[in-house]
Structure formats: structure tokens, C-alpha cells
Amino acid sequence: MIDPKIKTLLALVECGNYTKTAKQLALTQPAITHHIKLLEEEFGIKIFYKNRRQLVPTPEGEVLIKYARRAYALSENLRQALSDVRSQVKSLTLAITPTAQNNIVPHLFAKYCNEHPNVHINIITDNINNIYSKLKMYEADLAIIEGNITAPHFTSILLDTDSLCAAVSVNHPLAKKQSVSLSELRNENFILRSSSAGTRSLFESHLISQNLSIHDFNVIMEIDSVVVIKELVASNMGVTIISKNACRNEVQKKKLVTLPIENMTMVREINMVYYREFRHPEILRDIQAIYTSTLES
Image (cartoon, rainbow, N blue to C red; front, side, top):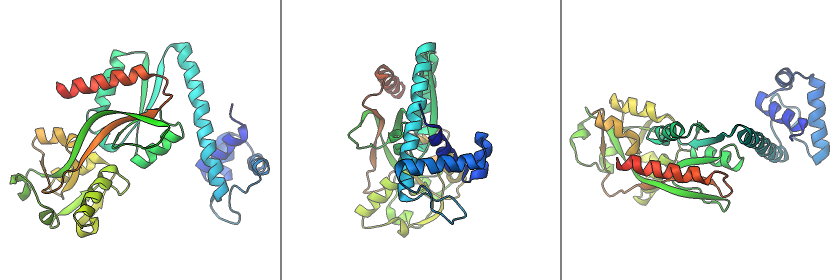
């Protein structure tokens, strides 16, 4: 269903130059150039700026590339859906945040797949902004995120609520306390998620409510891997702000201590977000039931 010229455009954006694209598509460079020229003529635009050493899309080119990706994803979804019908298999792509990756979510879906051998789930991990883009581009069928996505074409199911807290090594002086104040935390070295992470955004918004900003704290490192953050904090290399659910195992194994922050209640929802026309609503109901039973057990 996808025009070969669109495939050429997407490959060119991925490869970054005409030589690599020609090699990947087993075409000549003039053929690649011809495809791009035909697209420009068809839509009456310039896709890339000229006289640059690297490919930089024009504003019109960025729009075309965005919709080309969406069209390609829809085409692939169609092929997968038809294949699923023939083989009686349900294939889904689930997008989750790094925090969700480190709690019960992967185990939850692994359990579901074991109980339903006709279901195949591909899990991808990304930050909340990129997950939103993947949903919009139909590159993901559903997502489990902290917080919610407010858009008319999406709907959601509440799975759980969680809260953020400070986490320190069991060997840290603060580990003996029942709670910690922001003034005490200002003396610590912080290891945090990047600014695009939902956890970080929620923490910063609560700091603003206290007339503070993240710049009032000594952030020595920013990492997108929750696993690495927990390892560094457990090694007493710094402290962090993290979801209580995300470090439940480390607390049980006495590697980390979680502390509520005085005068700050950072509660957030954990939602399963999907398009309203999601084609397997029975899977969503089953997942919600398994999630609830796992938390109660």
C-alpha cells in the first residue's frame, strides 16, 4: 500500500545520506534522487535544505516525513492484522516508560502471554514524550505510563496509583530517618532521570509549588536508566527521587531506603492508554484484572 517513494524518503531520513540509502535499498543514487524529486513535485515543496553537508528537513519536509511515518506504520499494522487473522494470533506493541519497565509490568504481560499462547506482545521502552509520538504515529498499540495523555482520540484505564519519594543507600546517614526535608536534600548529590522523564517533571512541578527549582539542588548526573540510577544510589554515590513501586525489590533486599519528603505529596496515576478504536478490548480487561490480582497477592 505504501508508495515506493515514501519508503525511499523514510530510508533516506534514517540513513542520513544518499549513498547509504542507495546501498540499503539496492538502488542507484540517481534513483534515490529521482524519488525525492518526484515527491517534491507531487506536493509542491522542498523536502530538504540545499547546500548542507547533512540532510536537514525543511518545515514542509518535516510535515511530510511525519505523515509518511504514520502512513508506513498503518500499512505495517494492516499487514500484521491480516497475518494475525490468518494465523489466529494477536500481535501488540506495548510502549512503557523506564519506570514501568522496572516494576511489575513486564512480568504482568509475560504472565498474560503464558496464559494466552495466541498473543504476542512486543515491549518498547521510551520516555513519555516519545511514547506519545509513537501512539500518534500508530507505532504502538497501547502504552502504560505514569500520568495520562489528554487527547480526544485516546482513552485510558487506571491500573494503579503510585507516589514519588527520596531514595538513599542503606549506608547513607539519611537512611536512619523516617522522613527528609527539602532543606536536607539540598545538601545532597542528586542522580536523576533526564528532564523529559515524567518522574522528573512531577518532582520539578512540586518544587515550584515550594518556591524552589531544580537548580537549587546539586544534580551531579542525569540518566534515563532507572536500573543504573538504583545501582548508583545503592552504592552511595548520590540520592534520587523515584517511584516507590520502582524500587520495591531493592527496599526488600535492604539495598535502598525510601523516605517521604516533608510537605510534599507526589502522587501520580499509572494508566494504560490506547486509541478508542483499539481492536482487542478483551485483552485490556484481562490485563487490568491480572494487574489488580498481582497487587493484592
